[in-house]
Amino acid sequence: YNNYNKNSMTTSQDYQKFKETSLKNQPIRRRVALADLKFVDKKIVTYAGLNFLLTNAAYKDLLNLIGFTNKSNNILVDNIGDTNALQLFNTIKQFIASNKSVEVMIYINKDKEITRISKTDIGEGFSISTTGYFDLFETISQDKNISIKNSHFNTDTGEIYIDTIFDKSEFSVGNFRDEIFQSGFSFQLKNGKGLTFAPFLNRLVCANGMTTEGVRESFSIRALTEQSCDSFYRHIEVFEQNKFVPAVFTTKVRESMTTKASLHELERGIQLIKNQSEIEKDQIERFLPTEKTYEGLAMAGFDVKELTTPQKKNLRSHMTVWQLVNHLTDFGSHNYGIKKDERADKTIQLVAGELLTGNYDISNI
Image (cartoon, rainbow, N blue to C red; front, side, top):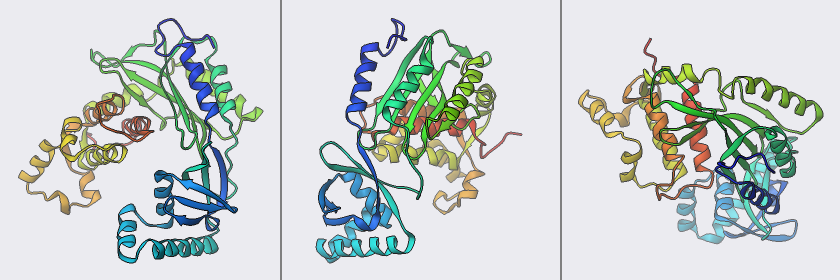
C-alpha cells in the first residue's frame, strides 16, 4: 500500500502491520439468548456446554445488562455471599429473557475469553468484515496524498478506526492566527453501526484532533452491497469537492467563540473525562478548569447541587463553547500519563465534535 508520502505520520510498513494485527486478532461475534449464559463464578460463564473465561469488562457489561451497577453488585455479594448472589443473577437473567426475548452479542477472543457483552436488536446484523473494511479504505484512499494521524484496533470488540489528514489541506477560520486546521476523514468500523465515514479536523497550534459525525457530510453503511458502495463513493466525491471541510464548521467555530458554555455543558465535559479515564478528582482542574465557574455561581447565591438540568442549561460558565471543546480535544489527543479506556480518545473527540456542531444551550442572540 503506497499511498502515503514520505512525510507521513504512519509509514506504509506501519499500516500493513496495523492491518495484519487487526485481521489476526478479530474476536468471534455471536448472538446468544441472555438466558443461555450461566454463571459458574465471577470469572467463568457456561454457554452451550462450554466454559468461557469472563474478562472484567465483560463481567461489568453483563451486570449492567441485568440492571446492577458495580457498586450495587459488591453490596449484594457482601450481604448474601457469592453463591446466593450468583443464583439471584441467574434468576434475574432468566426472568428478563423469558419476558422480553433478550438477546446479546458476545465477543470471544482467540484465548477463548468472552471480552465484551453488548445489547443487540433482534434481526440486526453486522455484515461488514474486517477485510471489507480495509479493502474499502484502500479504495477510497487511492491517488490521495494522505497521512494517518491516528489508528486504533479494539481487541475486545474488533472495532477499528483510522483518522487521516490530507497533504497541504491547511485552512484557517477568519483572521484568527491560532485557528488553522488540517482536514481529512475518519474511517470507522463499529459494532451495531456498520462502517462510518466522517470529517476529521486537526488543529495545528496544539495538534488536537476532532471527529464530526453530527454533520451532513457523515455517512454510514451496514453492508457492502453494490448499491450501498455506489452511494458511499458518490457521497465521498461530493465531500472531496469541498476539501473534506464540513460546510458548517467555520460558522460553528465562530459561533462557539462568542457563546458561553452552560454549566450543563461544562459538567458534561467533566463527566466525559471521568468516564473515559482514571483521572483523580484533584487533577480535573488542570485539564478542564471549573473553579472559577463554581466560585462565581456560589457568590451569586446558587447551590449547584440543588440545580436541575434545565436550570444548569441556562447558567453560563466562565468559558466559551470553543474553549470547552479545545480542553476536551486536548485531553483526548495527548498522553498525559493518566490511564484511559481503550477507546477513550476517539470517544472524547467524537463528543467534542458533537458539542461544537450541535445546538448550544446558551445563545448570545
